[in-house]
Length: 128
Image 1: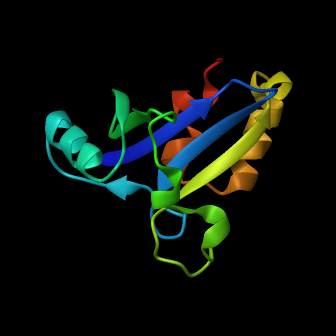
Image 2: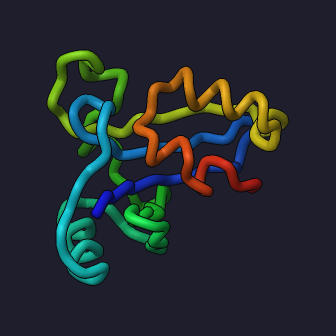
Image 3: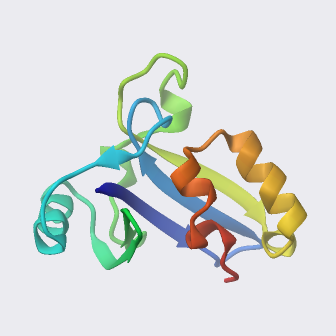
């Protein structure tokens, strides 16, 4: 099963979407186990899970940004996205006014070069 820890911060004029990815931010995690086991593994590794949502073969774990210790993790800015094997938070800043524009989002997510599973997710196509 694919696992995608994420957070969304809508408190400012820009939406901040963070996705925790592996291989320098190029790939999604693949895990085995029940939802309960995955939630325990996430909590043990510093991911304060708010909710988990299963969509086809992917499990999206919404992370509590107020409790997340970001300094304990790499961010995409700290790794070489072409060669790194480090797991990292890849953070996207999107203007709120453009979040609901389907043309913008289609081109934005293609340009972001995210795995296909992510670009077809309702997480990225939903309105906030």
